Amino acid sequence: MKKGLLIGLGIIVVLVLIIGFAIQGTYNDIVAKEQEVSQQWAQVENVYQRRADLIPNLVATVKGYAAHESEVLETVTASRAQVGSVRVTPDILNNQAEFQKFQQAQAGLSSALSRLMLVVERYPDLKANQNFLELQSQLEGSENRIAQERKRFNESAQAYNTRIKQFPAVIVAKSFGFNEKQYFQSTPGSEKPPVVNFGK
Image (cartoon, rainbow, N blue to C red):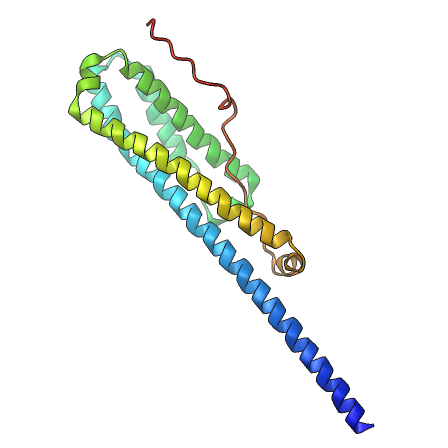
């Protein structure tokens, strides 16, 4: 009787250890994927900051040539200020409303910069200015980096979101409070090609 009890107890201990190691492995995998999402988010913030840092120099350069385009310059400056006013906390990736606010502020800045570049078309001297050309090149590089980092962020968020929805990881994720991360969405209206009017 004691031998049977010891064998039963041994089997229970082995099962508990197997389940414990499985939970630990799943938990660690989810944490690693969440850290990857956070690292990618930091890269997204980094490239957005790079773009924001270029704007004062760009505005100052354009202002020297196109001072009477003050409305466009003020819009760019105001959009940059709005981007800076959006509070970015670690929780933003779990909060759809805050994430959308961040994305809308960045889209507003992108739109204002596009309008600024259209204004520049009217000033051939400005388009030939070496300072402006360098800033424009850096801005284009920033926009490319932003697109690339957003893509990488979405890929890591997808891997994380998929992992926390798979069985048995879903049980571990719910037990330890892992939440789904937000994705970057395309800006409304971005599916339409831009209208270029060379008549002005």
